[in-house]
Length: 147
Image (tube, rainbow, N blue to C red; front, side, top):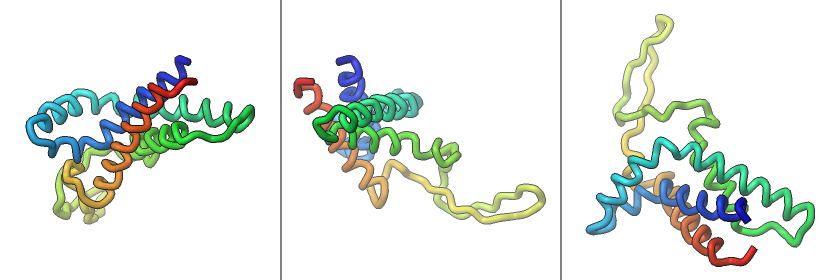
């Protein structure tokens, strides 16, 4: 029961963190949601870990004892991987500019493109934002679905 609640709350909060690029565009509430997301964002990795652990637990339980794999677990694993993607790849997520920059390291000058605006809802950010809204809906559905 506690694991199901953790999975549902991780889906809701993780979905919110993924969907904030779209949610901040809502009139009248977008700025408030954006400031709340800025306060919660440093703990996004923790939400991702909880989502992966809870969803992994239920994947194992439902594959071993049945009845079948549910969409709550699939979305939970997706939320966990999306929130932990930079950490899984070993990146820090400190990219803040969109222009090419010359980076000198070990005497070698290299060019790298840095990305601005994970706030803009285009491309992969839009896809993750839509998945975040789906995760919010699935999390709310999980709260009202009996165990």
